[in-house]
Amino acid sequence: MGRGKIVIRRIDNSTSRQVTFSKRRNGLLKKAKELSILCDAEIGVIIFSSTGKLYDYANTSMKSIIDRYNKQKEEQQQLLNPASEVKFWQREAASLRKELQYLQECHRQLMGEELSGLSAKDLQNLENQLEMSLKGVRMKKEQILTDEIKDLNRKGNLIYQENLELHKKVKLVSQENSELREVYGRQNVDEANRASQAPCTVGNGYDSHAPIQLQLSQPHPHNIEAPGKSMKLGLQLQ
Image (cartoon, rainbow, N blue to C red; front, side, top):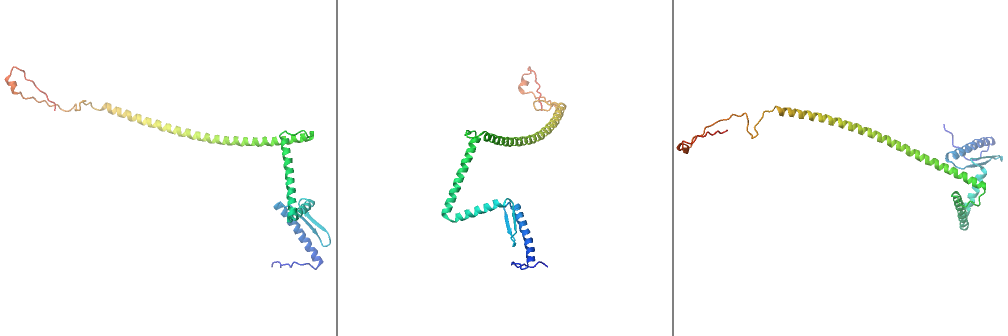
């Protein structure tokens, strides 16, 4: 069975009241500590028992927490009054101008200007600050250069791998070209051999091995009338 709901009212029995106070006080302080750690909150807890005993917890300083609380309450009360609100913002503006003036002065001193009013100790502190700043700048510069070198090395390795692949492709293409040249060379030799073994033909389009038929032409009449003239034989190629 689960625990019954406890009625929130004063416990009449002093013993039970003391036991409940001790348990719940420890639980409250534990929760405050966990809240300060988990949420990075500034927490202060003050407990007075019925006998007047003080119990407190603060994750920073109880005095600083109380001062901050009083200041915050005072500002909230001032904001409720329009005249007080104007004075509050005037003070804030004056504080910001003072802070800006201080920052500008520090900047000029870091640039090597307006150093006449500084003592030897102040100058030494300024020099140490500049050296620390210069050291930080050099470390950042070295880190950037190191990262760039690593990036260039990585790109160089990628280019090297690409060159290896291209060399392999070029070698493969050269081998294929050599094989093609060998094949074409053998084909040309075979064609030349077949051409050298082919039979000769007459250039005028007639076959040299075709039979030649001879036919005597008949004498014409005027040849009979003039027997003195010799008879000519005509050869016709068919």
